[in-house]
Amino acid sequence: MKFLLFILLCIALHGNTRDTYAWDSTAAKYMPLQVGNIWVYYYNYTAPSTGGNGYEKYKITGITEINGKFFYSFTLERRVISGPAICDSRIYSAPIQLRLDSVSGNLYKTTNCGQNFEGVVDSLRSKMYDSASVCGNFQGNVSRCIDTSNVTIFGQSRKSKKFYVQGFEGSNLHEYTQDIGLSYFIYSQLMSQCRLNLVGCYVNGLFLGDTTLFVGIVRTSTGIPENFSLSQNYPNPFNPVTHFKFQIAESGLVKLTVCDALGKEVEVLLNRELNPGTYEADWDASAHPSGVYYYMLKVETSQLEVFTESKKMVFIK
Image (cartoon, rainbow, N blue to C red; front, side, top):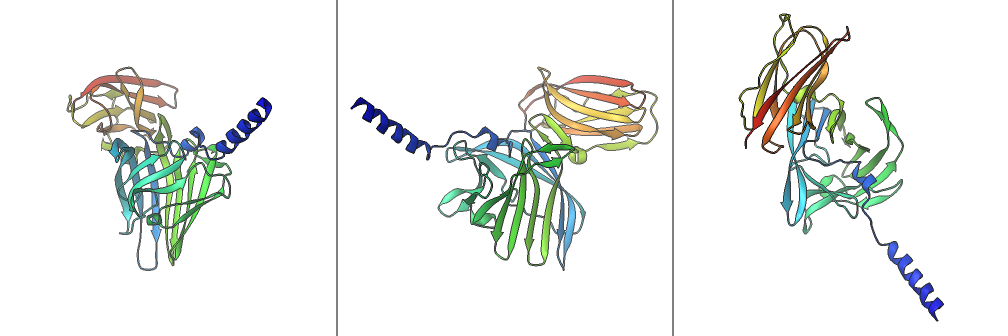
């Protein structure tokens, strides 16, 4: 009798596990949501009668509670190169508020979707050929995982998941890359097409590609300074934007970072080659708490010389 009860218990437990989800930490890595993360894309829109291209920067600036659920809020900055047309992706269409469900692995976005205040964008726990019902407000009703092969991005091979969504007279193809997020998006409808390509990101403390397009780096003088230098920020204290001035005496790799009072790097403002000259940059600290911060300038030249200097600043909300 005891043996029979044991067998029945095992069958019951096995049946329940089929309907039980556990937190899939791997799925969460395909769209890392953390305040301060930044993604910069090059967009290109083509159509018979219009077009446009430029850059878009998306930054997570805070967390908002809606109906007992916590969503990450984004800000958008756009730099138009030419043309009036812009892209409108499934994830980044306004308002940009996202959350990743810790049970199902579904990526949700705030929207009026039927009787709900949110809708599924994609199911990031999907495996090859899996499909998921998504909110039709996001240019289609079903999202299918069509590719899980590795991709090379920023010189590194990483796991990815590609999804296909069939919409009205059009389709979407988009790609999430592990530890990076949305890395590619293409939307086609009739004779028009929109593309987003990731050109840089700052995710969970990791800088990849180029995000300096929106930092606000301005070269104020082309004269060659005698020395490297970093000036005190102004204003100081500040709320929420402050400015930096620095001088580069020799061409080299220039990195400008911000650290908290404990020395933890919280944002990379600049990480690229610069020619000699005087520059100004700015930092918007609205996504960070009040407190003491340090900003550091590091320059590495072709002569293997390294210049570093840091200064203290105070952010008061």
